[in-house]
Image 1 (tube, rainbow, N blue to C red):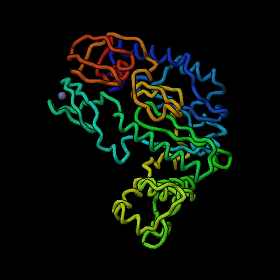
Image 2 (cartoon, helix red, strand yellow):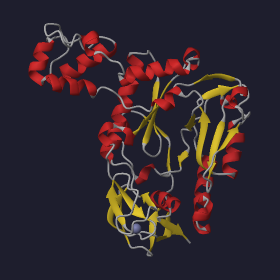
Image 3 (spheres, helix red, strand yellow):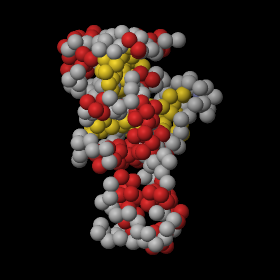
Image 4 (cartoon, protein in one colour):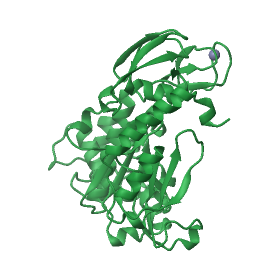
Length: 379
Ligand SMILES: [Zn+2]
């Protein structure tokens, strides 16, 4: 069954009108080489993508997305001579941006994070990690009803900042932008020079391996097993400096002073040192970085999973970022019929209490993802 059939007419029209209104005025952050990019959309009510679109100008793109408001909107990380050609080997590949993706639910500490889920068959709501089956009726028609919890979002921000730091310090990128993907991810995008655009998939894999610390030999790189040697200084480049900073920070030692590995092991323990160092390894999605033909969500577009826009995060809001109603462009309240019972739950900062079948007014920020997922319907 298509998504269109799942959404009752009133719901479909409401979502469509919200998206169309949004895209009439949306501030999309578009690249200078817009006409060399492939664009792709997932239309509202469809489960598949329309790919290989190409636009000559922002106006042309805007006309398209206002007439056919997409649920998801992407452009290619790559630039092509012929972005509209379907066969990848005939597109005339010219190079690709370097993109990093951090998925919050893939972070070590957040793999078991709990979210509110609801069963669309019986209306039962329950907390859990990636719930696939209703605990009350056994149905597999279960969807997420709350966004990523704040502490996991915070972990995502920390990882993104850490990655940005590595890209600047160790790879010499002058500008690195961090974006919230509008649902549960972060995109980290260094400003890619001509040389960077030409990196092969293999080059990109090496960069990912370096960041993930794959093949990192602690003894060779930092003399970990030679007790008399010094813990690397905080201001050294690369992994040595990163290891040094973590140890000295943990021990509250100011930069300038140094200690031996024997001393560090005595104070933190061998396992403690190892754990500290493994916490420096970043969980990034290597598929995204290695694939030079990747499609990226356009900054300023709506992520149709949660209904929030992709936004650039800068200091100082970066540290206090949390998923709240204020981030949503959908402000107006709307009358919906609930398909689930949710009692006394706070979602995106809004308190919700309603029974299945009850008609209530919901703020647009909640109504959008609820209606999209079938948790509520309009009309
Ligand atoms: Zn159920």
